[in-house]
Amino acid sequence: MQDKSIVDRIEELKSKIEESVKDLKSSKSLYELKSKFLGRTGEISDLMKCMRDIPKEKRPEAGKIINALRDWAEERFGIIESVIKLSELKEQYKNEAIDVTLPGNTNPTGAYHPNTLIRRELISVFAGMGFTVYEGPEIENDYYNFTALNTPKDHPARDMQDTFYVTNDLLLRTQTSAGQIRVMEKQAPPIKILSPGKVFRSDDDATHSPMFSQMEGLVVDKGITLCDLKGMLDEFAAKIFGSGVKTRLRPSYFPFTEPSVEVDVSCFECGGKGCKLCKGTGWIEVLGAGMVNRHVLEGCGVDPDVYSGFAFGMGIERIAMLKYGINNMKLLFEGDVKFLRQFKMA
Ligand code: PHE
Image (cartoon, rainbow, N blue to C red; front, side, top):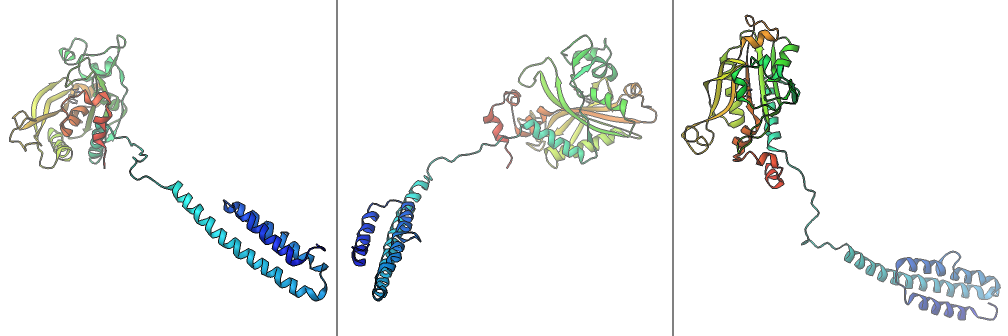
């Protein structure tokens, strides 16, 4: 220190600063450099400390030029900082740039199966009329699936349904009607239940599948008549197929209902004039129903002289096919996402 004048030292520092800022690349190294020179223990502060060694009368002058050096250095670093910052920002923008023409990362969402949609819709329509849901077992014994439904072993109506047997007595239920018995055994009237579920029959073509779904309904109370069934069916038809859709009952046969009916709805496609969907008849068959046979009520401990009831059963796939214009039942079981995606709700 002694052998060098303050001025020399300042010049030295200046060129040292110029030299080191030359190939500054990042603001991080700039800050390091800044504190090396301008920090509290930096080289310019060190220079200030040397003032002690300077004769008193020269100190104000020396202070002035050291301060000028500090100002100069601050300005120099300031300029460099703004240049570096700008180029860093440019680099950042370049890295963050998005090619909006690239396909995005989509999160494919699933769609509800048409069966699920129809099942939920049916439950909501009937829940609105006071029905509650009961789900029975898929493996049943002969009694619930047949005998208690007025279809004993030798009954010809057994041939209406080809049954998968598990053992002599256990079988895959062929109809959700089995649930009617389970409910009536457990619950005293009034009864108003809806029973959706899978059923199984040894049957396989474009309109039949060995496994399909049904929706059963059962109402038992004092004074229930076929008119109650008709009224409820009208409400169901209007809600599911559209207002203005009417129902008609045709005589039919089921061992567990008497009288039994086949229920048609007026064609919602052509309004009843006749078209391809209704095969020119103006009507579409949608379900089976009837007044619960008194033998069935008796077998469940319900007095048929006090109570009466109606039951109905429909194929959920059939309703789905009609409503969505699906012409092959297999589509409902293949699980092809291209088919299923079409049922995505908005
Ligand atoms: N279980 C009948 C079937 O599978 C449908 C049905 C249910 C008919 C209830 C009358 C009453 O065909």
